[in-house]
Length: 104
Length: 477
Image (cartoon, rainbow over all chains, first blue to last red; front, side):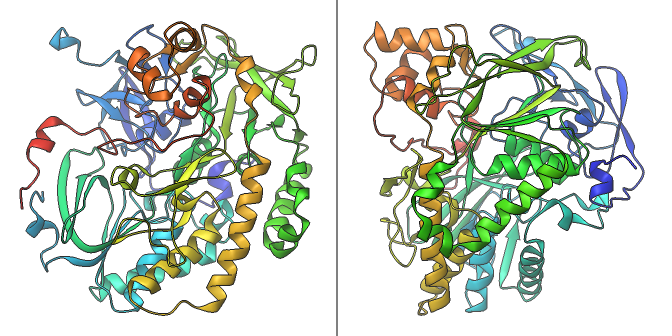
């Protein structure tokens, strides 16, 4: 049997719920952070930097580096490695500082 | 949500506020409560345990969280004692509380951002404070380290332990320090292929003090256990080597159409960590987990002027006396804040601090355990101290400060042409270390590039980003 994190921890999670990432549905297990749900789908980048527009995703995984910022339910600059994925959350790739509407 | 002291501590000031619910803080809080002190256990995380005992969220219903950890029964026992003290009203456990400001007053004021998204705020009062804020990982930049799929070794561990996920299928583990072996062992156990562990040191540093090794047989046993697990999965250990470049591409599992890491270049290092030309080899992978040891998290204490010491690994730690008291009256410290030494040492120091705060005599067994483990920690620190030659693998266009996108070339110009000789001046000239992470990812590297011989503690008025409105709303009394 193939080794997986869930098999290692003998996890039998509650049923997955769905969040939306850039318009596409993504399953998330109860208790997983948004970053974990994205990693589980092989997605490792969800932000472009303010300067050079380079892609970034979770780096430190513990809320220290702020690389994993995304816009969640319309609020920019949310640390997705800390934020639990809630059913129906809308996550969008964050462009730069995420406040394009302010024209700063 | 609580905005005034009376909301957050309705029964008046706590006898003790413990900041951080990792091994040191947990041990400190339950031991202090055992002695009859009324404690607040304040933690930025969602569940007790800190980074070391990080474990799956309840919704994941993991029957065997112990398989992700060494020494799980120790944590289970602490968690039981915490639950009993909470039920008896002796400990208020406050998760999702990030203390960003510690005010030295009678009693102490602790100001925190609260909630999973940090949007709430709370202020607590306490007669004494035990700082158990742990550590974060030290990073040394290299070309390609900002590519998606490159994560910290501790981050890969944290995401696995809490979310049961992996950053890729074929993960190179690189950097320096004992965390690499632990991370590689858990990643392989969870199904990842680890084609290589790349360790910059030679491990020979451990052999310099055989007496210290003999006195800490548990540490050796742990190393042997990791080694056996890794041999079983045919993980190759490259010593005196480093990942000197990560290569991006769109060929392997594209990240939403964006590039991600698809290979790394590994080179041999000389004794000063300078890459040896002609030794480069390419290793294919879809993720890289990297880390160069841990850095004690001290901002709350250094901002108050607490005395520090330089540890043999080149980091700065708090100076504490035999009772775990810092140079600031009423401010105690335990665990990684006193120099990175691992969970077992943190447990002993947390308990010793609690006994001293309660006015009790220390337990002899704890004192000798602390002495043995602290000696091992200093040996480990010296064995993994980065060599000065690491900066040879940088290129002018390599980003050093990830937040502000400041390159090695820009920092070089600040040092060579503009005369900067310390990290603070480099920051003022280039913005390196001025971003969201407050220099946690780049300050070790920037200090080296600025040519600082001895590290100094970073002084920051706030230990995390805080909205101006929240500062303006701080209670006056």
